[in-house]
Length: 398
Image (tube, rainbow, N blue to C red; front, side):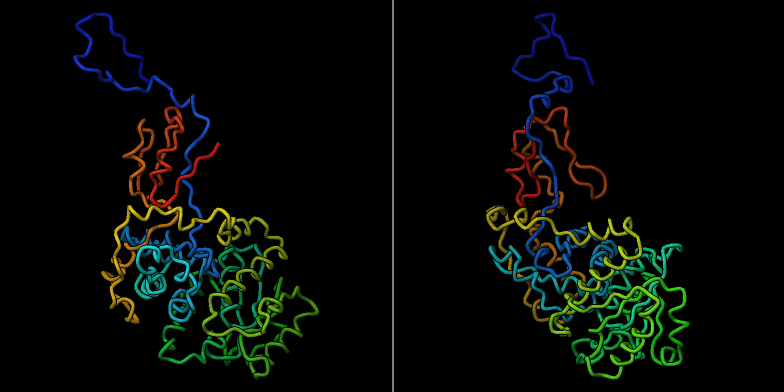
C-alpha cells in the first residue's frame, strides 16, 4: 500500500482539483456493508434442460474459439451430445430469453455442431480401488449410468444382446440418427469413461457367473428395449441370475410409462445419471458424488434469471440466419454467428461493462476466462456494477 501523499508547500498544489498519485491508501472498502459477487445464476434454458446443461457457458467457450472446452463442458452434463443434438425436443429453446428481443438462440444446432466438429474430451480411465459395476442394457439410460460411473473411477462393464449399443435408438429412422453417428457417440462416451462393452455375440457366449464375478453392483436398464422383446427378456433373465449375490439397482420408477421415446433421449440420460448417483451411494463413494451433485444442481428456481432481469435495451435485435434454422448441420462460421446472439443470461461473459462504470476502479479482469475480481479494500458496495450488468451476473450480498 502506498503512503498518503502530503502537500507541504503552496507550489505543490495542483492548478485544478485532481487526485495526486493513487488512492490505495484510502481503504474505502471499510465503509461497505454490501458486496458485489460475480455469480453464475441459472439461465431459463439451463433449468428447462432435463440434463441441466449450462448453455451460456458452453456458448461462451465457443465464442472464445475454445470448441474443445465447449464440448468437454457439455459432456460434464451430457454423455451423448451428438444424439441429443439431433433428437431431443429441446425445451431449452422455448425458454430462451432472447425471444424477448427477436428469436430464440438455436442451442440444439450449436450442441450438434460441437459434437460433430470439436475434438473429443480427455478420457477419464478408472483409477482402480473404487469398485466394479455391471450395467445391463445399453439404451440411453444405461449408457448414461455407465458413463457417469466410469467418470467417477468405477470399472464398468456394459452388457447388451444387440451388436450395437443404443437400445431403442437403433430403431430410429436413419435420416434422423445415422448409424455411424450412434456408433461414434457410443465409442466416444465409452472412451471418455473407460467403459467396457460386452455386446452381441460376446454377450451371447458370456456366462452370467463369470460376468458377475467380483462386481460390487448391478444396474438394470429396463428401458433399453421394448418390454416384450427378446433383448429385454434376455437382460431380465441375466438380472435375475445376478440379483441373489449382488446389489441390484433398476430403472423402475424412473420412467412412468416404462419406455422412452427417441425425442426423450435427454430425459433418459438424466435418469441414467440419477441412477449412477444412487449407485455411488450404494457403493460407499460419497466423495465421488460431490462433483456430480454440483454438476446436476441448477440452483434454486427463485434465483433463476427472468426476463425483467435482462437489460434488453443494451442489446441489438438480430434475427438468426434462416439457413441456420433450416439446415441439419451448420458450418463453424454459422455456429459462431449464432453463438454471438446468446444473451448469456445470468452468466458473466467478460463484457467489461462493470469495469467501465465502477466509480472506484475496484473491478479488474483476470487472465484467461476468469471472472472479474473485486478489490475488497476499495469497493464501497454502491451496487452500480450490479445495476449496469446487462445479464444480471452480479448480485449484491451482505
